[in-house]
Image (cartoon, one colour):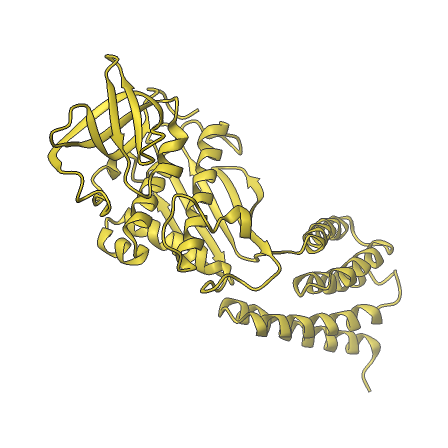
Length: 384
C-alpha cells in the first residue's frame, strides 16, 4: 500500500505527464489538445496539492499549490487559480516562491479584467527589439521606439484586412483598434525590447482569419522577404498592389536609420516555437525596392524615366483630388505630389507640416509635379 508521500508524488508525476503533453500540443498548434491536457494536469495537481495538509511541509506544499495555480491560469480557471494562490500564501512559503505566487496573482487579475471586458488575449506574442547609438540599458528616446510600434500596429491591421480577404482601402474597414487591441507586455534591458500581444473581442473570428499566429507569422515572413530582396515573392504574398505599396512604405518607416537605430528585430513566440528576423538594412538601402505605379493612375498619368528628389514642407491633401498633396520646396516653389493607393493614410499623412524628402518620377507635360516613390523625414538629425 502506498504511503501518503508516495501517493502525492505519483499524482504529481501523472499531472506533469499531462502538462508535458500540453506543451507539445501547443508547439504543434493543437489548441484543443493543449487545453484538454492542461485541464487534466490541473485537476491532478490540485489533488496532489490538497493532499499536503501540513504547513510544515514546505516548500512541497507551496510548490504544488503554485504549480496547480499556474495550470489553472493556463486553462482559464482564474477563480480556482486565485484560491490556490491565496491558500499557498496563507501557509509558510519560502520568500522566493511567495514572490512568484504574487506575480502569478497579478497575471490572474489582469486576465480576469480582460475576461470581464469580453476580451481574449493571445498566448502568442511579437517581440520588437531595437539597438543603436541612442539606445541604452533599458532606456531609449520616445520617438524611435513608439513611432515604430505605431507603424507595426498599422502593418498588423493591414495583415488582418488582407487575411480577411478585403480589398485595400485607405478608409480602413477592418482595424486592429476595432476588432483587435494591441497590448505591450513589458520592457527589458540591454537592447530596447517590447513584447506585443493581440487581444480581440471574445466572439467568432473574422471570416477567413484563423489564429493570432497567422498574423505574426505573415508579418515576419514578409519582412524577411524584404530583408533578402525577394520582392517577387512579397508581391505574391500580398496579392494586391496597394497592399504591397503600403507594406513597403511602412517597412521603410520601421527600418533602421543607421545612426540612432542600427537594428530592428522581430521575434514571434508561437506555440513554443520561435520565428525571428533581424532587420538591418537601412531606409536608404531600401530605396531600390520596385514599387509599381498604381493601376488606377496608369491611363491618366504618363511617367518619365527621370527621378527627382525634392525637399520641403509637406502641406496638405488636395480637397478635390484625394490622391494628391502639396509640397513647398526650399525655393518656395509649390510642387504637386500624386500619391499612389496604399501610401496616403499611413505613410504620407504622418508627415504633414513636416520637412520631408520626396523621391518621385516626373510626370510628362507637368511642371513641378511628381509621382511619389518614397518619402521620409528630412530634419537632418538622428531619431530622437
